[in-house]
Length: 263
Image (cartoon, rainbow, N blue to C red; front, side):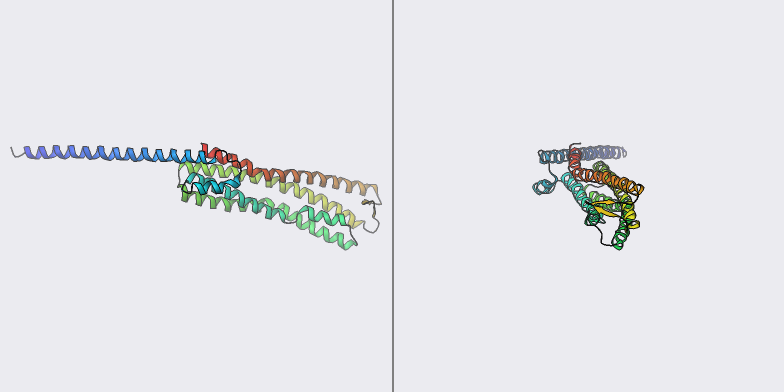
């Protein structure tokens, strides 16, 4: 008879443990369900906030209306990255800008020393163009590290974070592709320009200018100059097209940010 109370106590303990377990699992389920509900709300709020917004410059106003929405904050991070990389690329491209160097050719030269000085500046411009890609890559790496850190603070290492960083990598890849083409076209432009300048420097004493055209003593020299000038013109046309592409890139990226919110 002494064992009966112990059995009854054990049964009560087991029943109590079961009740506690059921309550705990139910609580966890409700918490998880609430988290999923909140996540859906955040996404729906983000989609509604960006509906009808077609200009990246409007993002600041959108974020002011929804300051606690972390998805919109991620979009703002992508926008900030785009703005900063655009400014960095403009700074890089401003070094030895082709137009400034071409103006010196159009103004003419008063001495061989002027032509040789331009030739030296073109050598430096070639070096800048050749190293443009690697310098931009370094800027992209620093920018990615910054975005990755800030996004991790906002979102943690979640699936949304991974999707966001994939989008950022695509954004950087498109920027890099355009800058690589610009660097190649610039280098081609400067190499051809240097050919023109070298011909002028070598034949400066006997080269004449008639109606703004250089007249060389030998037809072979004139042909070399004309071929180089044609290469310059083609490269300049490509550079103009690439600058338009680079400018429009940010707008195309905005559509991808909206797709990210919609995923």
